Image (cartoon, rainbow, N blue to C red):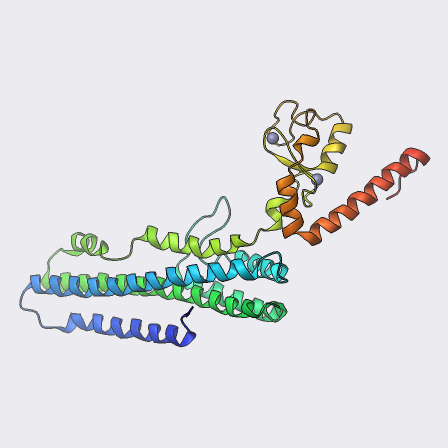
Length: 314
Ligand SMILES: [Zn+2]
Ligand SMILES: [Zn+2]
């Protein structure tokens, strides 16, 4: 499998600049009729969009390649899963292309993406996380992951400057000819650019690469905020660790503490233990499971001692 080396990205940047300069030179062509101006401009924009579509195709091919490699190197049977999880936790903090919270799903502009990506790379360099990756393929995957981010930023930049140049050219034409083609022609020409929705879906696809590795926040018990080890799935589908539910029953709780489903806690029994999820947690979060087991054991011993002696051991 061949991935585009960094030199190619530099080459692409050079090409973008070359195209832009050629494009801006359109405004200096002596034109005999307005129609000639519009046709020339449309042809140029069409060619630029063909280039952008090629970029999009390359991006999607690389995305699939990296996805496959990530699946391999982040396998729970390999040694890099915790390091990769940390790298992606940091990556998501920077919200490079889109927001990743309920209240913020906004796409970022190319300048923001570029500065956030730089901060992310610096932080990873300073953390020495990449050096800790053990699988021979892991370091290559990280490099290619960074390059894929750069490719997407270049595409966003390419689109931004092409749209800006088009708008400026039309405005200049209108000023020189005293015609009002601005809004009407701009609407027409916009159709030649990659739609904003396409960009947003590319940005989301980029961020979704991180979901290949399950993150602990998605598997925490909502009561104790630790891993939901031995996970009890109530009839309402909410999941808690068995320790929290045992303690809740002792306190007389009957309903689900999240959705208030009637008697969901009271009626739960060993059949509610989600074995599938339990095996998954054991496989992907062995350190967290081990710590939770030890904490639960310690807590149980303390409870038993208290029952016998009446003294609470912290
Ligand atoms: Zn819990
Ligand atoms: Zn519930």
